[in-house]
Image (tube, rainbow, N blue to C red; front, top):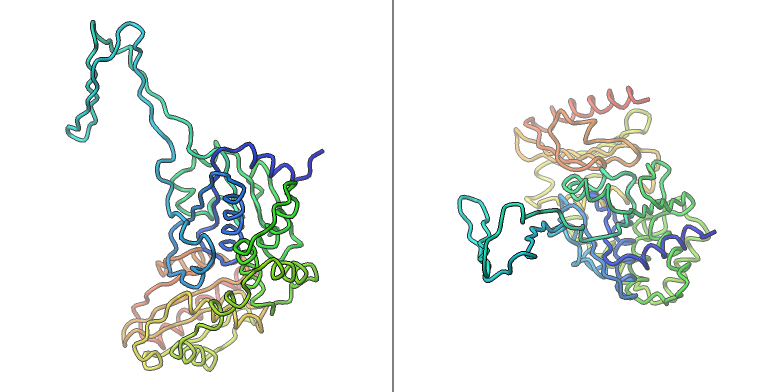
Amino acid sequence: MLTIEQQIFKQIEKAKNILLVFPMEWEGDSVSATLALFTYLRKIEKTVDIAAAKPDREMNALSFLPGFNEIKNNLDHLRRFIVSLDISKTKVSQIKYIVENNQLNFIVSPEDGWFEPQDVSSKAGEFLYDLIITIGANDLESLGNIYDQNVEFFYKTPIINIACQAANEEFGQINFIDLNCVGTSEMIYNLLQADDNKLIINEDIATGLLGGIIIKTRNFKTGNLTPRTLLITSELISLGARREEIVNRLYRSRQMSDLKIWGKILNNLHLEDGGDLAWSWIAKTDTQNHEIAEDILRDMIDELMTNLPDVKIVLILVEQDFTKTRMFVFSLKNTNVLDLLKNYNPKGTVKNIAADINQDLNTAITEIVGDIKQKLDKLK
C-alpha cells in the first residue's frame, strides 16, 4: 500500500500542468512553503504555476523569497472554447473573422459546395491544469477569488490538500494533514525528503522552507517548537538556507519611524475581557504624518503576541483627524473578524481587517472596544 507521500508524488508524476495555490491571507508560512515547492517542482522539470488572490496590502517583507515574482493573482486562459466544423463533405478555402456588436463572427469559405448549420458544433475544452495543490488552506473559500471565480475548475480537477490545522475540511482527493508540524514549511520539507528521486534540496528551496519556519515560530520564540523543528532548521542551514538574509529582511529592516510607532503601541496597550482582547491607539501627532503600513502593524503584532499567547483579537486604532479614525483588527485564534465586525464595513480577510470610522479617536475607542468585548462574551 502506498504511503500518502508516495500517492502525492505519483499524482505529481502523472500531471502535465500543476497549479499551486495558497490562501488569500498571504500568511508567511504558507507563502514560503508554496514557493519552496514551486521551486522544487520546476527543478524536477514539471510545468507548474503558482496563484493567490491579490493581497490587500504590500508584501514587501516576503519579496526576497525565491520565486515570489512568479505568483499570479488570477487564472487567465484557464479553459479554451472550441468551435468545430465538419469538413468531411467539403474542404475549407479561407477563414476570416470580424467583430460586430460585441459578437465574434467566423467567416468560412468552402472550396466547393457549402456548409450547413448542423456542420458546426462547439464545446468547452479541457482545463489548463490537471492537478491542484493547495497549501495552508483549511477550506476552498479561504483561497478568495482564485476559487470564487473558478468554482467549476476546483470541483472538476484533482486536489492535493496540504495543511497542518485540525480545522481543515479535508476537501482534497488526497489530504496530507499533519497536526504535529509547526507549519506547512516543515511539512513540505518532510514531503520532499520522502521523494523517491532523493533530489537534493538546493539553496533557494532551503531558504524558502527556513523562511516559513522562522515566520511561523516568530524567529523561534513561540512555545510550539519541537526538537524535530530545530533539527529540520539545522538541516536546512546545512543545505545552504540563507538564514542571515531571512532575518535581515524580516526583522532588521525597521525604519526609525516604525520603531517609534511600535513604542507608542506598547505604551498605550490595554488588555480586556480576561485577556482575550488586546487594544491600543495611536494619535495623529504620534505618527508625524508617517503612513502606517498594515504589514508593519502585523509584524509588530506577531512580535507582541510572543509574550501574550492567549489573546484572541488585537485592535489598533489610528487617529486620522478630529473626525475620523482608522481601525485595524487582527485575529490570532479562530475568530472571524470580517464577520464579527461586519457592521463597520471592513475590508480584508477573516484574519485581519481595516475600516475607516467617522468618529474622533476617543469615541471610537469607547464604541469599538465595547462592541468587541460584547461580541466576544457571546462567543464564550
